[in-house]
Length: 274
Length: 364
Image (cartoon, rainbow over all chains, first blue to last red; front, side, top):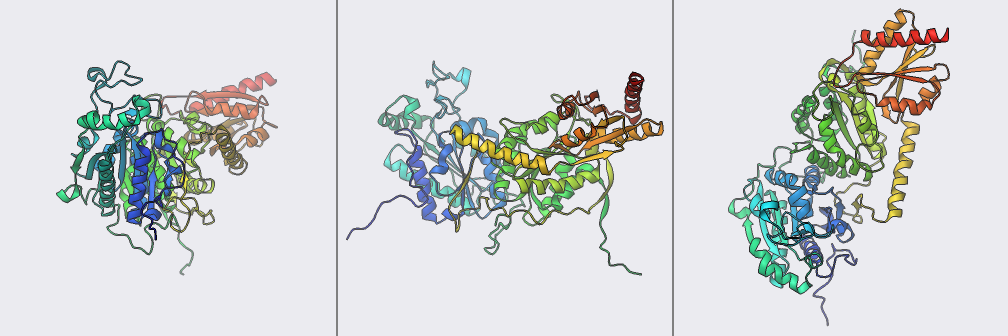
């Protein structure tokens, strides 16, 4: 007798990832899908992919998805969640998308305590456009737009998003993880689950920042890239829990009077859409 | 004696408030906006009234960009949704409007136009005609553009805008201006939203009982993108055939026909009446849909009128559409005052009458 102990998550389409060898997106996609399956929420989840390498996420996630303009994931997710408060809404965004062009949308969604979750993939560069400097690029890091290395006097220092968002009352959960080791991959899955839990319990805004390898643009092998995360990148972006609703984070009042306190199963919370 | 006739409600309202009331009566339960003069009363009207609706959603967003993207999220969720702003703010929304058009998502966007370019001023103007009627954002697309000329028409066209947006799955723009938005007129709440619109079977609500689906605008294969553009333009051609709205006034025997929309059409109407009192055969064509533009009516009128006089509160934008419609079939004259200046009917009459007499002299 054999027993199946490992398989493709139901929420992950049987498609071949287009991502480069050694890229972290495929791992993070899979982890997110595993959590969606574990929670049994595939049929009431709506995802928002970014502009960036993960723009084609709708070819992989077997859930409803809508593309957001570059940086606007948090605003699009806000619109969806406010209309469909009983659905799980997440955006999946990279560092250029979230921490540069979409900074305002991110900060204000967090401050309003929107019940959305952001999977924030930090690979310290603009991946899809060819490895330009991102707000998260490390000091001294060579990119196509910082050929002499990132100079903090000219380009600023890396933005630590979790630490930045921590101060907002509406934020219920923040954790920084990485997908460089099996242990950290498991930790990432737990963090995504916790973030979704924060949303489903109406605790407030949640975000998981995942340090993710980009061997192509880092000009490293896949193995060198995961080592670089552990040895260099995570020194700049320390891993760990930054904020958790069990410690009183988040604000049940932050979302304002628009959202009903409870949604009845009868109307599904969304007759417009039916 | 009692009557069983249903009493149609009538109220003295500011233009901005009338748009808000119409939106709510059209079932718009989601509004996202950002303060900017001269549209603030609309944002405030929605703040007071939308949260009272069943599951109504109002957010004062952090920016115009965020607002239009919240609109996108509400629209994919199936809600009737609106945002409003004034000229500089509408410029910021253009990226989102392009996405809405590409993704075939219904939404209503109100522009209470003010003087420009740049920060300009807060006086009424018509200088956003190009931006509104040419798509405004990047890429090949059109938006339906409705130009109201009274508070009543703002009310009626707002209800119509939601119906058109849903019918064609496309963003619809309402062009108001600082004058229409701020002035008060009686409004009859007679117009009702249509009940025969197609079911929204494309919304993203979670994939319960069906396959998952996605809505996107990224089409990397050039052939697929081209096919999508053709699909959009087949829809736009259908809109051009079916949805042109236009008012004609005393054009039958006119030697000069004034073409004007919105606030300038009201001024022009006053000038036409005065011209007629002086025995001058002057008429008026008032486009109500600025896109699709009433080309046919203008062409038809050119069969008996050889002089068109375009009047705009801008340096001349709609005048290009009039010239394109006529394609040389008649003379096109223009008078415009940009920067938020409001022309009086007497001033316009003076200019039109001078033109009229020149034409008469030339003919003699």
